[in-house]
Length: 130
Image (tube, rainbow, N blue to C red):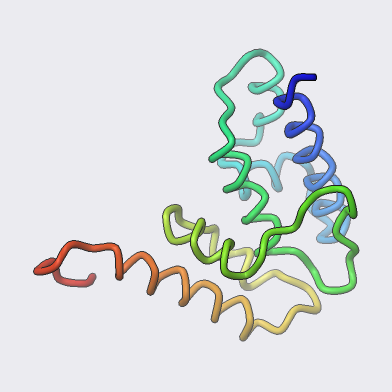
């Protein structure tokens, strides 16, 4: 069994559910979560795909997931700690914070701040924050 098709299928399912819950097109979700509106097209034609990219995408989905929308049971959902750790490495589309339906914005902002703190704590001593 090859894991790449399985992981891509998980992302496609998350993308479809996310788009339906927010009223976005698949292209919009791919652009906001994956960075390009042709993510699946590129990956199915042999584009580079890593576990780190999968983790990043799943964490971004979990970060912006709407309350009341069930997360697919057979796809492991990352914990808040894992989300903060992954998002500390990569920027997040700020629109995900503002446009999350039903989720208290305070929780989303708190996760973003936690990610920022983790990012800041990784700077070498003597380097100014900013």
